[in-house]
Amino acid sequence: MATISSCGDKSSPNEDRIVVAKLFSRGDADWLQERVEWAQRIGANQFLIFPDQVLREGAAEVLNNSGIDLWLIATIFYNDNNQGTSASAQAQLAELGREPKWAICDDGLPARQEGGWLRTVCPNDHEYMDYRIESLKPAFRACHFTGISLDFIRYFTYWERTRPDTDPQSLRNACFCDVCVADFAQKNGIAAIEGDNTVEKAEFIKKNYFNQWTAYKCANIDKTIEKILTELRKEFPHLKSNIHAVPYTNDDYNGAIKSILGQDFALLSKRVNQISPMTYNVMCERPAEWINDVTADIVGVVNGRVPVVPTIQSATSATVTDSVFTEALISALKSPSSGVVIWQFERLTEARLDIIDSILNNK
Image (tube, rainbow, N blue to C red; front, side, top):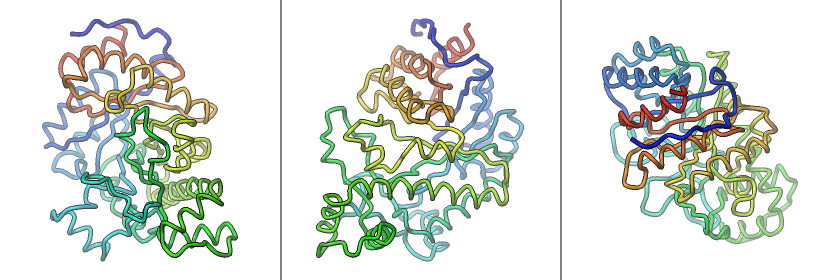
């Protein structure tokens, strides 16, 4: 087991600290019960879980009896059914009646990671958004949920492979489909967007209206969150909200958090109850201190309006050793953090549980 040093400068008294168990995998009721007991053991006060896990036989009873606040993970402009020929994917297509309208980048190509899993939907596909909201309701009806945790509530980028030395100009910008371009022009009073194709139109917008384009994207994400919460609160009036934030500081990659992702934390903090930057430092090839750097930057942007709770990786590997995990946990808890999210919680080892218990509970 790793040597545990004091984390010292904690952001708040223990009773106020937010400790989140965030699941990725799915299992049967017995499997879920074991993870709930892990969460209870370390004193977790939030449990994040996907809708299809909630709807498995026996899961709702386990969750409702956990004594932990339940938050439903909702993947918005991406979801597990967006690709493939699985039965669930086909069911989605049947219910929606078509494929989603995929976002288009400034290179004229779909907003998709080459050769990979990530593909995102156009944020102006309103019919798709109506479908996504409705698809969440069965899980909310099954359990006593405190909140919704919004993932992929952003424009396209594959941030997981954005390195410290990445050229900002290499980041693809979306969405430049005909619907988005026309909507942008109309809302900004632009008579004509010059260009004969997507690439030329994108270049015209970026050259002449870059700030307006960035503001448009940020407003679109904010309005989408407003729509989701408004619709769900008609049936679940006390629902709180969290957003999964891309772990860029305000200055990273020439302000990409706004201009590429459309995540304006100053704006969104007026809408949501919590912000969780996905500070996977090993994945992003950053030192543990970077977790606190990102957290502090977001806290500064939101001016303390909402708690900021960074997320760390739990999986054991050659690179994520117990010592590396311990350093990440300590950094995540440093002021001005309001706590920590542990992902993938289900992959914790006994040693990791002991580390967490010792640090969180001063054992």
